[in-house]
Length: 112
Length: 114
Image (cartoon, rainbow over all chains, first blue to last red; front, side, top):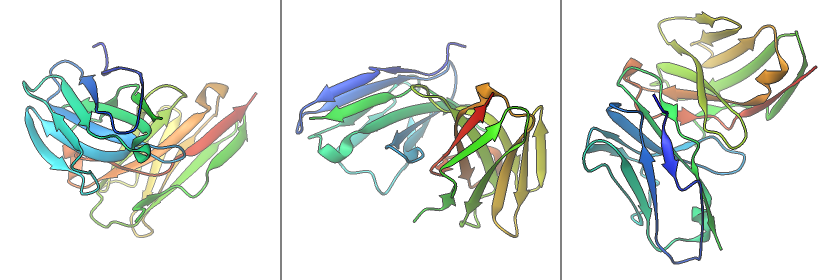
């Protein structure tokens, strides 16, 4: 059990650029979640997968955001045409159904 | 619409004393509740959970109490230790132990003084 791994840990980009984050869940966990956390707030749900199927997306999630989990293992979260308001910590979590979610250390995104 | 609220942004206690962190929720569909602890530059770490069919769950120094009628839960840490200093998040889910999406509170910064 090596834990949930996220890459990169930090990303600095200019407004309007596209960015992609990767999450490697704990091995064999069938569920994978993406959350976003801004300063002074708790994590906010974005989307989650069970195996390769995306089961739910937040209504707050702009269509500039897209997530995939092509083989039911790692996942990517892409943000197109980044905006200042996208600056946040992006957290990934995974679990087996019925067990608590385990979180990675996050990717901090800064938009210049 | 903040469905899970932690109204105390911070709490300071002396080592060895009890720490009590509070959380209120508004969504009646929530039936599973969790507490996470977060250190700087790390992701949240699961501490303890409680189902709505219970009113108390205990794990070592940590006890969670649930008052469904008041839509209120609390985390008690006894005795508090300096290593407990962290941000504590309350989270809730609907759908029992299927642990779907979590809705988090804003967090409470706990500082335990030696």
